[in-house]
Image (cartoon, rainbow, N blue to C red; front, side, top):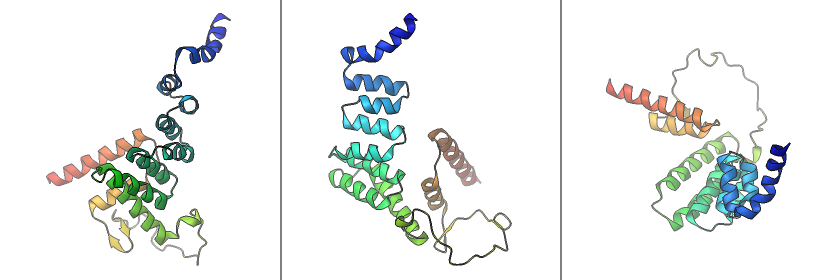
Amino acid sequence: MKAVLILASLGFWSGWWFTPDQWGDHLMKQEKYAEAAEAYADPMARGTALYRDGNFKQASNAFGTVKTAEGYYNVGNCQVMLGKYDAAIEAYDKALEIEPEWVEAQENRALAVARAAALATEGGEGTDGKLAADEIVFDENPKGSEDTGDEVVAGEELDADAQQALWMRKVKTNPGDFLKVKFAMQNQAASEGDK
């Protein structure tokens, strides 16, 4: 019973002993991202907590209040996660106006441009992926029967780097799985290069 009272009062007393940002840091360490976002006063820290919680729209709003290269860059990252590639490109452009040599912003912008171009050929952002079929056609050679493993975009075969960039844009998984697959691909590419 005493433990319950102590734990219940911790939230009340935390305001006396910690600043909002210190309490937010404490909650972040415990991976309580939504609670941390509510606690933070700093918009960058709040945006980071919201991003880790998967609330990309509110994270973008929080980052958008910070008119720095990092703020715009983070808005771009949120917009990419929301599938709003034109807005992401605009945010990366603002970040690059402030820090033109920022390599990560340049790379993320290039990925957003490529994904927007691919999406434009698939029907555009306004469709939310809901395209009506022009006609129904059955594939005579089901996937895997003659699959060479080569990625083709707009009728052109992609080289290994372009394939990897395309794959990276398609990834929707947790960071641990993503890194495991990425390192496996790099290891495979390195071993193929040794041959």
